Image 1 (cartoon, helix red, strand yellow):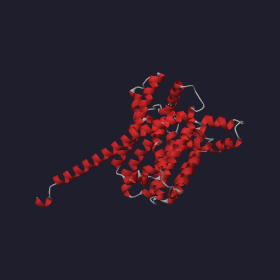
Image 2: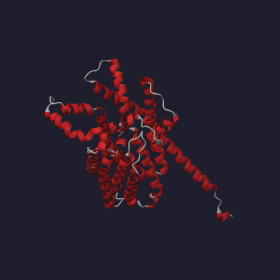
Image 3: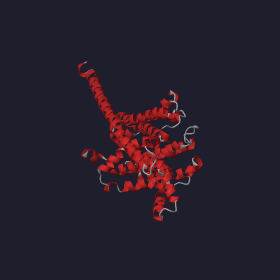
Image 4: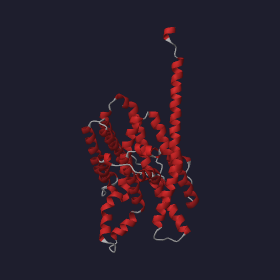
Length: 369
């Protein structure tokens, strides 16, 4: 555990915890907190506190943007250290095992408990592969799947950049590439537009992954600082301009600015943050909580109401059982997937090395011809 602690980027762990708590509160506690805020029999101090922290959890939007910023940062860092093949193998086994488990469990419970028919392969395959945006496939996991679809597109985009540009040592122009990609999404979008999908989510939110990447490049002095800052400002301002046109229901929310401020603040004080086991423990649950919270919550609530009458502590009980399930999913399915990815990566590297050695051995020695 000590070795793992030393390898962590603590400011990212803290942001991941904030992000999943923001999403969880926004999805499952928002109505309860709103009712408290509007209840004049509640002390005004408590109501004022809830009002002040509202931008941090309203709709989970702040948490989602923080997720994207964190992902953009860490994926760029990982690509700097790993080969393209290692990155692809490890990310596949990092993302898909737990995700596929969540999809299959949700599908099974939907069928067994609610009688919802199992989707056909034309829906299930794009959903399981996170390619549903190209087929108009409705979201799963109570709609949280949309963020993972954007993540996968970002991985593909970054792998393409690594293959084409990384070895050419032109990282300093990456902010320009991100700017052009953002302009492309905005000029030819909004993406996506299928009836079953949220309008323009790729256009609006994929650029925040670029911002996270720029922060890493600027931190390591690998990109031009002026270009990086200008690109970040363009993405932020253009989002504020486009959101009322594409998703007007979010035009009265401050979650984008709030998320960018929190990420920037955490990044600025990153060297002053010390690792701790509770932070690492909660950070490790991020992915599982995100995948399961919005749909498994209802089944847990249904089970508790079946076992005993509804009571004042049911929200606490649901939350505790959700975290317990997510912990078990993390130490079993998620960790097994990560270990499998590392194992396959090592085997692939060994095979490549062996194949390369065999090729050199079989090459004729020109001096002997």
